[in-house]
Image (cartoon, rainbow, N blue to C red; front, side, top):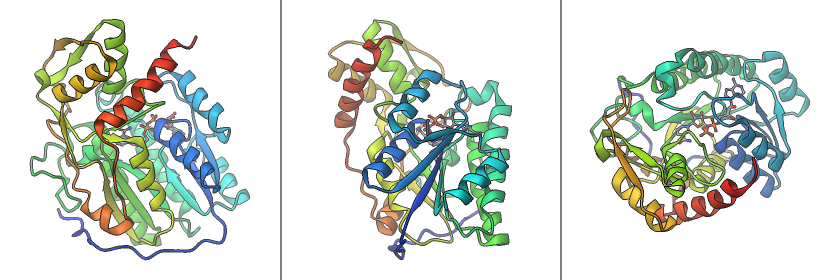
Length: 331
Ligand code: NAD
């Protein structure tokens, strides 16, 4: 199946008199940084989150205390979502709420169907006929075990390797249905392994840093033979923000760094920055994991002027400085 050949040209700009952005998953890692950036740019913003306990809820409260604009609302709550959209006169929805994580989807498939499929349909139902464009998070995981690198948006994405990936692909398909039926505009952003301060404790970079500082072993899956296109949070946020002032019908964009790193190189970079050696615990490949992710970002560069520019060394240095402060705070 071929979605559409990506257009390597810039998208038309749109002027808004007044913007009011709703960010779902606003207490989450990416959502929090998007909110902070919108506030910095003096754009009205409100966040919603259900504060679920997939990981450390206190980190979600910490983020929402910092931003001060996140309400406790589930995306599936059609009534409350409709109310917020109407009373605030929302002009854009940035949908980042989801059940994230590939490994957790092996043991908790229902959580993914609920948040990523059912609530996504609820959101589309809330938005259809409002004229509000939708910017939503997809994932590099939709490329599955594709070995045709770098991954371009026009690659077939018919064989997701995990249940998580299948729900993210489902988002893209559902968004397409709502474009066909109701002319609901959307852009799906396929993020590639995002890392940074206030990041997710369930992700490898976070637990690696934690265990390296504590002198505990770190699990190295597939005996280190994995590569990921690690992308710094500020680059992802820039890409998301650039989608606010452009026009699209139904689109998909890769947001990655475009420079995959091997897991061993990644660990070495953390060791160098932390000034400590990691204790490696080599393990087999986990079901659902893929060997490589590598973004072709030429479409995002041409269409919205996306330009990832934070190197792995700089990004990890910023993460580690934050992590040292965070881990020393009383919890
Ligand atoms: P996150 O888990 O930190 O943030 C998601 C937030 O959504 C959480 O705070 C959670 O409480 C909230 N949430 C979940 N279900 C909800 C619901 N039904 N109603 C309201 N809130 C709900 O994850 P993140 O890393 O910030 O990811 C943001 C988005 O980007 C997700 O859609 C994720 O799948 C996608 N993504 C992330 C990465 C990455 O590397 N971080 C990579 C690819 C895609």
